[in-house]
Image (cartoon, rainbow, N blue to C red; front, top):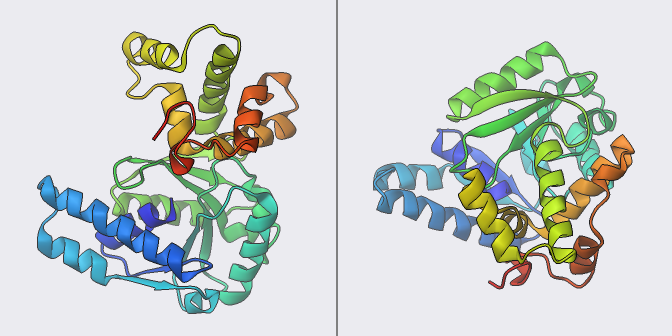
Amino acid sequence: MGNGIAQVFAQAGFAVRLVDVAQPMLDRARATIDKSLAKFVEKGKLTAADRDAARARLATSTSLDTLADTDYVVEAIVEDVDAKRALFGGLDATTRADVILASNTSSISITVLGAATRRPDKVLGMHFMNPVPLMTLVELVRGQATSPDSMRAATDLCAALGKTAVEAADYPGFIANRVLMPMINEAIYAVMEGVGSAEAIDTVMKLGMNHPMGPLALADFIGLDVCLAILNVLHDGLGDPKYRPCPLLRRMVASGQLGRKSGQGFYKY
């Protein structure tokens, strides 16, 4: 999701530095951003001049050191608490002490991430929805030590991005995934138990409940490995068996069937 977050900041007039661990990932991110901006121009939602200006505001790097003079950071790496804590420690050492460090995590405790820094009052959750350039919601998560000033700054920033901020408490899964993931998990159980095919289950939810996308197609879009990681956080953090990941989901992830990004999930791509 990092490239989508970078795109919306650049479109909103901010100078953006997109950092990743290797140049091929950055090249792929820039190509994805260019393709997205081109679609906006094609649909008349963005002028060619605005597209070019947004592209010019985007720089890429493989070094955290390039963030030394940045004013605001949004992290969007793999959904793994140890990896995120290590990164937040590095960001804390690299950036100015007044800089807010936000995480796009969809389920991991902001309090835990804040504890990896010397500025827990300036650590918060800024959970964008995917695809970021199209979805207006941002779930803002207040950690145990997050200051009101930091939350206000993040709320104002969301408004500048053209997004709607909704505050959530620092509980596993926050609001969005605490409601969404049990539905996806139950849909996977329904497939495993032969209640209906993936197509049948998704059609029921689209035509019967007016969902724009069925839960299994959505799981493929999110990534089945990401869904499993979030369900594990919910199950471990809340201790309730209703969050236990479906065995079929575990098998699919173990076999490399991760959804759209691997070409195979509940559907073929």
